[in-house]
Amino acid sequence: MRKYSQAVKIKYLLPLIFLSIITFPVLSNSLQVADTTKVQLKDTAKTQKKDTTKIQVKDTSKIQVKDSTKIKVKDTTNLQAKDSVKHQLPDSIIYKRTTFSAEELIRGKRLFYGLVYLEDKSINCVACHNTNVSDTLNWNPDALEISKKYLDKNARDLSKVLLKPVGPKMKLVHKGFQLSAEDIVLIKAYMDKFVYIGLKQNKPVITYLLLLIIASLLFIVSTVDLIIKRLFKNQRINWAILTITGIFITWILVVNAIAFGRSKGYAPAQPIKFSHAVHAGQNKTDCNYCHYTARISKTAGIPPGSVCLNCHFLVRNGTRSGATEIAKVLKALDDKKAVQWVRIYRLPDFVFFSHEQHVSAGGITCDACHGNVKEMDRLYQVTDLSMGWCINCHKTRKVNLSNGYYKTYYSGYYDSLKAGKIDSVMVTGVGGRDCGKCHY
Ligand code: HEC
Ligand code: HEC
Ligand code: HEC
Ligand code: HEC
Ligand code: HEC
Ligand code: HEC
Image (cartoon, rainbow, N blue to C red; front, top):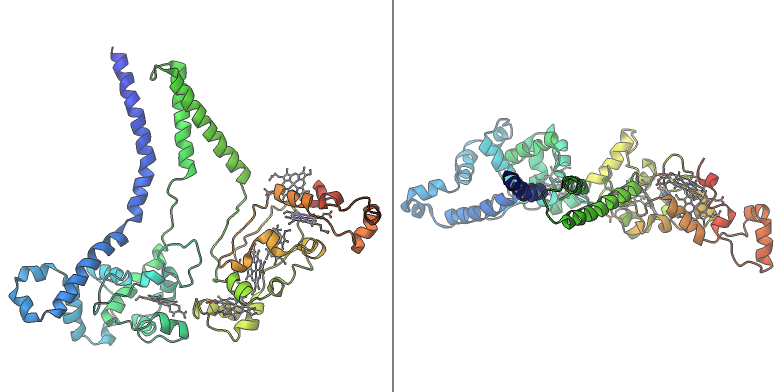
């Protein structure tokens, strides 16, 4: 009797444990996503908007007549910033402030997130200056970047780009900002922290690893149960669990083993927001202008800064990024430092691949292997660079037998082709499948 009741307990406990394991990451994640920013956005934006307008529209006498507690409870920060501090200290002293109370730092954050209404308007810095890592190209500098740039400068420098912006793009995006010296000091105090904490990473919701662990646990429990024969009277339940989790585990392991070390879709952020869509697409610059060794050597190569300078000696402002990104090109040249581009397409060391052979001899265009680069702002890896990918193409592409090399070394093929005995030779026919051609 006791044995039975224990088994029943476990029977109900196990699903509960699994349920909590599954839901925990989802819950914690949704909590994180919804964190401070959203909550704050809803609350403060509403209340503050109401507050300030009310206070401003209605003349002071009225407010005083109405019960005083109400006014006190509502929005003290706004009143303080407006009245007491602003009118007492000259800007030059305010800009030199270095210590801040916790509340002031919170106000700095809320100013940055556009949650404080000034003259019934708010400026949402975060709408342009990301505080999260972005998967796609965001033309505006992110919060980390601007905070690094301004860490050693003072609030007066910041006030210049906010209140008296220069440069075509900056004039456009920082237009009509009405911020007091006090607000700017607080925004700067808030921004400075990004240098130390960095940007927020985007977390995947549920990882395959977690699913794999859960499936493995279920698999083990079912196996044990099958051997000891306890929890489920009907053994078919165990067999069902074993089959489903077994298939799932095998599938995950096989898929991951094949993809191991490969990175289709890889799209790293680059040190300069260089866009192929802008250069190769809109401005129609030929791929070979920058990747000028593609036709004549093994590697296509990444252009050195001097190639950029050919145009950017004159073009100092971009429509999308303003002066910031192009300034990095010029700075790298001034510092005599090569730009640290992140490599995207890379074969393992034991594979030989030559661009010249494919582009010049084979007459293959770049897009056959690199996709529609002309439309990519942030470039990504289109193919998986697997051995199967190389060989599949070699099986289906004809070689041009009329070039001097093939005429000499594959004269047999050339003669048969001329005599009409065969109509084409695939790359595999001239060694495109020989291990030694691709592997040293
Ligand atoms: C104005 C110069 C320029 C032009 C024109 C240009 N590229 Fe690029 N390309 C670059 C730079 C700089 C990088 C490195 C930054 C990056 O990956 O976005 C690069 C990177 C690449 C990469 C990735 C290299 C790696 O890291 O594995 C490929 C592929 C590529 N370009 C293909 C093309 C193709 C195809 C065209 C023509 C449609 C083209 N490029 C036109 C400058 C250029
Ligand atoms: C053949 C001329 C040419 C070369 C070479 C060239 N660029 Fe550009 N680039 C332009 C032009 C023109 C623009 C302006 C596009 C616009 O604003 O519409 C531009 C814009 C940019 C922008 C800003 C884009 C925007 O809209 O904000 C960046 C960043 C940039 N280039 C980086 C580079 C880098 C890095 C290189 C070298 C690898 C390079 N460029 C080489 C012509 C060139
Ligand atoms: C509409 C989008 C937008 C908004 C809103 C915006 N910015 Fe910017 N900001 C930009 C762009 C774009 C640049 C780069 C312009 C350039 O380099 O020409 C920039 C540049 C900056 C820079 C760097 C200036 C430099 O010297 O390179 C700082 C600092 C900055 N912004 C702070 C702020 C703050 C603080 C706010 C909020 C009060 C804000 N921005 C609101 C788009 C925006
Ligand atoms: C037959 C497929 C194929 C074609 C066609 C091709 N590439 Fe590549 N490309 C590759 C592979 C594979 C790599 C990785 C090479 C490695 O890691 O050794 C690569 C790498 C690159 C790189 C990175 C740097 C380097 O030199 O390895 C650039 C840039 C590049 N290709 C540009 C181009 C351009 C521009 C063209 C057209 C003129 C082109 N590719 C045509 C397959 C191709
Ligand atoms: C889009 C089609 C295509 C893809 C993808 C491709 N190749 Fe090729 N490859 C060709 C063609 C066409 C030739 C014949 C070129 C010629 O006429 O010499 C060739 C020739 C070769 C040769 C010379 C073979 C010989 O007989 O001398 C080697 C080596 C080679 N490819 C390696 C690779 C590797 C490694 C990859 C994968 C990373 C790859 N190729 C992907 C089309 C392709
Ligand atoms: C057309 C070029 C090409 C030919 C021909 C070729 N390989 Fe490969 N091989 C590759 C590439 C590319 C990779 C790298 C695949 C990757 O990174 O996943 C590779 C990887 C491998 C690997 C490592 C396992 C793996 O998938 O990562 C082995 C082993 C291998 N090749 C053996 C061979 C043998 C044996 C032959 C002859 C029958 C051969 N290859 C012919 C291009 C080729």
